[in-house]
Amino acid sequence: MGTRQRLIDTASELLAGEGVDAVTLRGIAKAAGVSHGAPLRHFSGRAELLSAVATRGYADLLARGDQLPGSPRERLTAACHSYVDFALTNPAMFELMFRRDLVDTTDPALSAAASGVFDTFAVLVAAVPTPLARSGADLRLVAASLWAALHGLAQLWLWGGLAGASFAPSPESALAVTLDAYLG
Image 1 (spheres, rainbow, N blue to C red):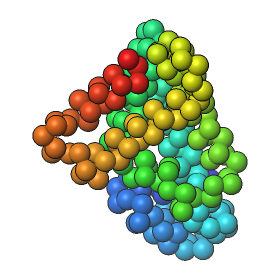
Image 2 (tube, helix red, strand yellow; image 1 turned 90 degrees about the horizontal axis):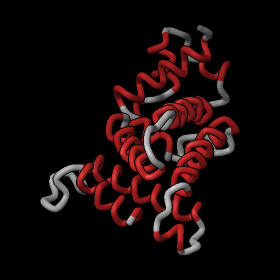
Image 3 (tube, rainbow, N blue to C red; image 1 turned 90 degrees about the vertical axis):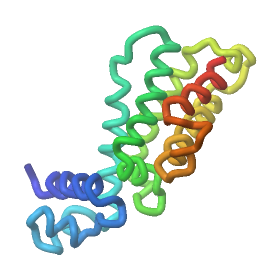
């Protein structure tokens, strides 16, 4: 494995273990066992390295949707559950993937990975004959709205905004209400 890949792997491990703020170029270099200048020989800066890590996160999220079984509705429901589960089991990666202040938003690989996840989700949304779909609504906008609802649910749960609330005993119960609202 080359140094570049080792730096991405190490940054991913630090991210998972210690959170976004712990992922510094010096910390990554130290944990990877390379000189403190090594990251800058392979990346233009922290944002480029974190973009590579976030790209991996999007690839992992997309891979969760591969081969979803069932009808279009069952596949969409499974994808929604998978999205929330990804966020709850990978909170630091989930945060990084959407922290535009930490990544290079012009990075082509990151843009392609993020777009790939959304485009796949939009296809799943479009395949389900919901009342919204039958109304002639822009299905990419419906997909973006559902994605935002899922993202907000996951983030509120992670930040404690819903955890422990008597009306939301679990992320799954809150997700069920969200899906009922969108899928009718």
